[in-house]
Length: 300
Image (cartoon, rainbow, N blue to C red):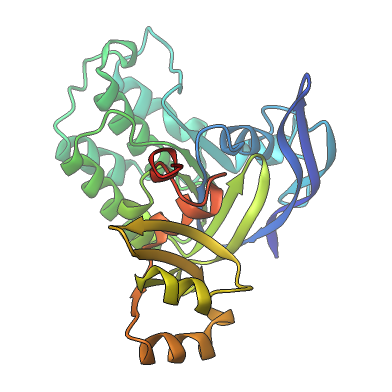
């Protein structure tokens, strides 16, 4: 059963298309990483899925319903981001005490253990917290709610590196105990790729890739060596990224499954064959200039 289904989804803000003709499905009990540069449409897409805003056109269903104004979706979903609001009159402890009334799967034991682990002050008010501490508390709410659909939109804003690592570990441990559909939007793919199962990569509001993270890691390969040799070998290939190294060497990224015979020829010609990090590949696939910033300086 698909938890989320989008068909031809488009969202316009005036003349700007934040989401453009987007189609994909997300099944039950999978952690999906929503990846893309700023302005790719990630938050807009998540808000449509959460039912916070309507699409301009196309169709979206969550738990087989239109999510906008859906009580079923609201009751089975939590949206965690840095803009989460809680009543200013309630302390952190009071917010957690009230949570079971809103989240039927609420795990108070987990919430209290995480609260104590991160040394939060039960008497503090949410709006008085630092940015990083707010994110930590929001994360606790998102995990302990154990909603069938849990959306984390850049949830680690302001967190220290150590807290982020603990969060990723806590998310994975809790997911293994209580599987559910989780969408995790992040700019830090290198930090989160080990907890993700699928990747949905957006570029200017459109789907660039949607595949398992294991496939993404094998999606491309890099060739490093003499520029003249690599240029000849990759003629006719789709090149995702290319940069010059010194005067006569280059680094070129191409799709792996289109290059089996090419790789043998490359090795025979003394060209290094290198893996491409998932985060780097996502950057290469969503940048307009395949040469990156070096292109600015290599024009002449």
